[in-house]
Image (tube, rainbow, N blue to C red; front, side, top):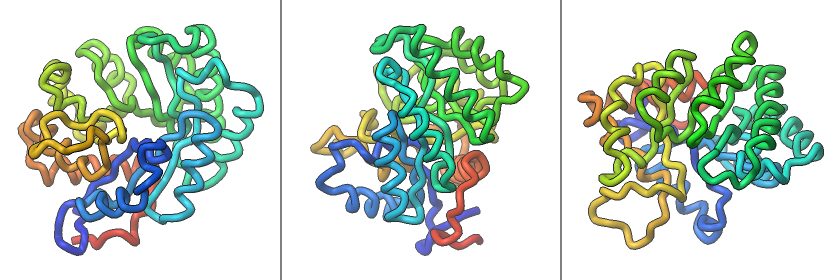
Length: 277
């Protein structure tokens, strides 16, 4: 198992919006606080071409930051060929470890569904061509999501449903296709997370990953309650503790399996961050 120098279990936050303007004043401090809490590596989410560039640039400042490159379904309506070429170019870099955030969001439809689907297909085909994993977003679009993914089943690389908040049928449909499942602080929400907490035990050990989606989705059960509602990667161990309780597993075990799953999925190199015991 991986431990830091203080013999504390370590974590990888696989979904952090570290380019968000809410981190502009103290981004380095946020990273340092995360490391002190045991979150020794972060995957910064790219949501459009410009944010993907910014995410990649952050990885050049710290060997334990990685990034994704893609177009979120909300931004699909503005996605042009130059953006696609930018994302394609970014993905040539080793530190850009997945295609996305991409997918479908029929909850708000900030972009028309047909355009969402077209842009999603572009990114699936790119992931298939370069054999980098897919970092997927889905909300209120499970049936259409699996229909599209099934069209590419023969060539589809590894894929994770980031920030999964769905129901049992949705979870089963993704697990049947060997997708990984990313769980956030949504599960810590006593209003919206109850249903999710009941089905988390069904996620196989080798398909579970954890994330904060910071600065969004701050765990509502943090005590003492933070003065700010900004979520941070340092809260990832708190989310892991909630997940451990839901699954009736030790926190150290959740840390171990989620860490190893992230290493394997994204092919991360974190050898400078910890000692193996």
